[in-house]
Length: 296
Ligand code: FAD
Image (cartoon, rainbow, N blue to C red; front, side, top):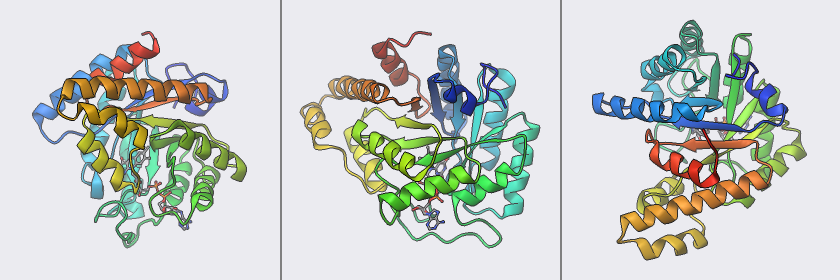
């Protein structure tokens, strides 16, 4: 339950210490597994506050998410956070997964609703006997004294939110249900993150909100990913990357520079840390750490 510092994540952040964390996803095959563990091994020396492992669409990675977080707990010095979603699961199944995680020594959960099986923005229908909103999953996890809980937050509001104020009230509901910290969808502009934090404060969602960072290493795929969440890359970002459209190495370098500047702006704005979407590779994160002069 505690971090490597002997404190829970909420206590650590409340002390004003910054949190640096890395996110991975369960790979599909043996080659992907090797790449994942290489990235984990290369990033372990950075002493992250936690590392998280996502939960695949439709509950498809149930066993793998449990197995990877269990191995991180068993074989590394890092604190694993297992993502869990409501998609395709009854409440009983969700409780059974929480039992499996606890027996494997995993005591931190990112409690999420998950995207509808038709993809982000398509209609959401809860599973019979399951849960409708992430706040209900937070409440389910919170009944267990052995679990600590993180939740999702959205710098520009969730794609289906009625408006930004309702989006903030959803975060408040997750906080009230027992969430201890939030991690955001990838931040595209520092000002969006600042706006989210201000809205959260206004509605009394009094939990640390850690901004999510994903450097742009491929313009096309990033544009597609951002569209999924109903957003667009900022014009100024596209203007800096467009000249490198035919030059992958140049684009990568500029993408890392943009991400570094974003991280600096976020930390200057008072962000309690940074959460890196690694896509199971360590290089980009290591480069940004070097630029930020965050030492191992
Ligand atoms: P909720 O908080 O339940 O919100 C979902 C929608 O319902 C929002 O539009 C909200 O406004 C609305 N809502 C919530 N409560 C109410 C209410 N009481 N009344 C009316 N409307 C309400 N997806 C995965 O499948 N696997 C993952 O591992 C995963 N990891 C993620 C990690 C992070 C850091 C983030 C930011 C997202 C992640 N996602 C993941 C995606 C996430 O599951 C989707 O964005 C999902 O659509 C919303 O999840 P949520 O937990 O925010 O849901």
